[in-house]
Length: 275
Image 1: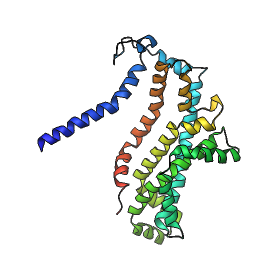
Image 2 (image 1 turned 120 degrees about the horizontal axis):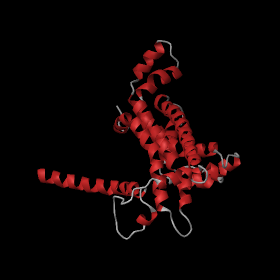
Image 3 (image 1 turned 30 degrees about the vertical axis):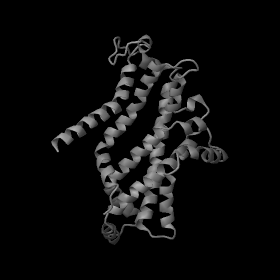
Image 4 (image 1 turned 90 degrees about the vertical axis):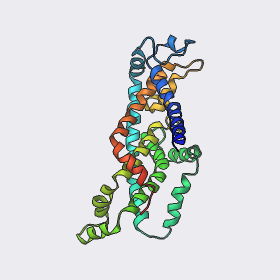
């Protein structure tokens, strides 16, 4: 038994190294000058550490990178707010009210997760175009919400199912309405679930590439994933600038993860259980 545990630990260490090594390599590349990146010798630690890559990325084209950063932040935050509002209210209705067709609606959210997101680009493009929202943040937020909401509804419904209905009955006796019990009782008890779904919505909008590339046509309205593509030229790739930009892009996600970390662990474990 002890020997088998050693093998498990060795496999876990190997898997961890494989998962973390690309991140470490990108971080190292972001501090290397261009000539050192294309050197034949492989070095994890840069010989000549430089901050020029970060300065070039942040000041590129009169600060357009900072504009992309603001666009991604705005779209990700709006997607998180819209996704949480729609998914929380829908999940509460599916969890508490037995209306006609609720099982079909519940299954439809599960069914929506079975299709690749790329299949949604054409119909979403058509709808957004008909609404006149192409090349706008509102259209992009609505498109991202269609991807995030089904998962968030399923996740939050499991949380709401674990909350005893007697708590809401007691609140109703004290004079609270359905919305009052939802806002004052259910939501505070579901903070881990809200953290997980909010983090998922934020990541979905922050890292998405295809929809942003399809819907946005002006360079000033690009999000960061589209902006980073500008470092890939027809005949060469500025790997040092790409690495520096990738590190900058990961910082907001890291901050959001650290802020919601204590809720994410409990949310991922308890959200999949019922009762």
